[in-house]
Image (cartoon, rainbow, N blue to C red; front, top):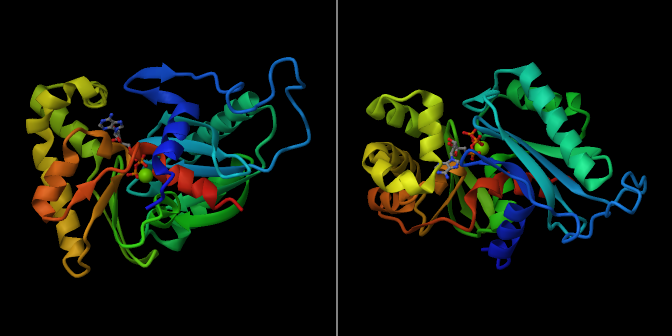
Amino acid sequence: MNPQLDTFLAQAQSVMVGELNGSSSKQETKASFGLPTEEEDPWDKSQPRVHVGVDLGTAYTVLAVLDEQMQPLAGEYRFAQIVRDGLVVDFHGAISLLRELKQNVEARLGFELTTAATTYPPGVPGTEVRATRHVVEAAGFEVAHVVDEPTAANAVLQIENGAVVDVGGGTTGIAIFRQGQVIYTADEATGGTHFSLVIAGAMNLEFEKAEALKKDPRQHKRLFPIVRPVMEKVGSIVARHIAAHPVETIYLVGGTALFSGIERVVQEVTGVPTVIPGHPLFVTPLGVAMHDT
Ligand SMILES: Nc1ncnc2c1ncn2[C@@H]1O[C@H](COP(=O)(O)OP(=O)(O)OP(=O)(O)O)[C@@H](O)[C@H]1O
Ligand SMILES: [Mg+2]
């Protein structure tokens, strides 16, 4: 595994701007990461070589920027329902959201972002991969690479052997690695949205309220019994896919890995040691950015 992982993800967390747990986090990153200060020309046309990753997700659309040394520099994310089960369902929404994220990040950095890499869940048809590419192009990027999600995630994790399980908003993606290469992938429709739906049903709340409650770590203890069956479902999906490809460790990434205790349930159901490497929410988008070369 990547020996720098914790530092890398902590730095990413500190430069990302967005809404988590319902409150906006706007960090001042300019001084600490060597960006132009107000006194310098904010639109310096000599552009540093940066690496940009775009991840259009069911729940979060993320724009991540790495510096020349592939270290987290800036980024922004937004909750938006523009993708369902890996397919772009709201083209206009996706393009205008991505344009906005691009402009905001450019304003903070003081230079234009020109190229980007983007990603798709394994197993989606080629037409969908092209649709994703078109969204990123329409938002004003030249698309340097299009990479599948687990390969992107593993650029950050650098796992040689094991299963990377990305529990996102809409789906659970599984990728099995042997000697650092993907040998098997699958993607199934169970994710954080289902957690929120179950909470909404059990507590008679609107979806948005349930979603907000779920993202508050202080609520996790009391919500745990309600969402446990969905965690078990995630575990049984993983168990089925690793049956033919035994692994020694499961690495959980994706936003839903933030729900306290999910790794214990997945470990219980699969019988395989399960860990959450660092902050799991931005692993895939950061790995996508590493593919903008
Ligand atoms: N603190 C938290 N606790 C529990 N769940 C969380 C937390 N923060 C975010 N989530 C959930 O994580 C999910 C989003 O994760 P992620 O950004 O990885 O998904 P996505 O890429 O948008 O979806 P997909 O990969 O399925 O297309 C949402 O369901 C969100 O509610
Ligand atoms: Mg995702």
